[in-house]
Length: 295
RNA sequence: GAAGGACUGGUC
Image (tube, rainbow, N blue to C red; front, side, top):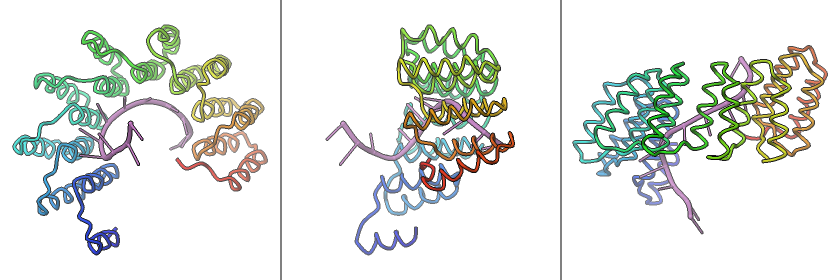
């Protein structure tokens, strides 16, 4: 990285706001918030003012790491510098808080942004609904969903998938299937929808229904993908139905789907647990030849 | 119709 830095200086290239923000974003996603803050200080020393994007990045990362005092300070600094937080800023922070497990704080922040007359968009609602579902607070999530509809923000495919996932986690796959049947009027189910339901059905032991759903959706809407098959194959291996799993794996290849590292991990783990070392070896060799697709 | 920040599913 230092090499690149020097090279840029030699060529007389001045890093701009975009460049700095890219760096900040990288350090934030790597969880190195301190380094990201240093980058922001450096911007200031070079007379480049951090903009809304720079602040939003850091704020989300600070929330996610539980550095809430620092986040508050930075937020105030942002306001002091006359940079207004927007819906993305708030949504990011809400998401960070949810990942932290502080859903109560997340809801507070949601209310705060409404007070500040920032209109939550569908992504904001989706983030909060997902956070509440994952915290096991489905009823609260459902209230937010109702609020979303009241405010005229129509649930999109991500909203549906999020809610379906929440229901499946609760073991309410029967209700999830009813929602699925009713969603076609509003949105078009995608492969995420299918894999979510397939996972839910498998969790309850309905492998046959899961497979059928995938089959129907593949034929009618071409909505299948790597992840969906990985769920199905993994479930059959867990049920020690190696024959079925291997057939699905062949089908997977025939469809032209491309296995990645998760696909192979699932296969290797499952086959080894079934004591099918020979089959595992064969697939492993295939991977060594073609290589898993990059994540 | 390109853009540096926010949302959903797969193994461990």
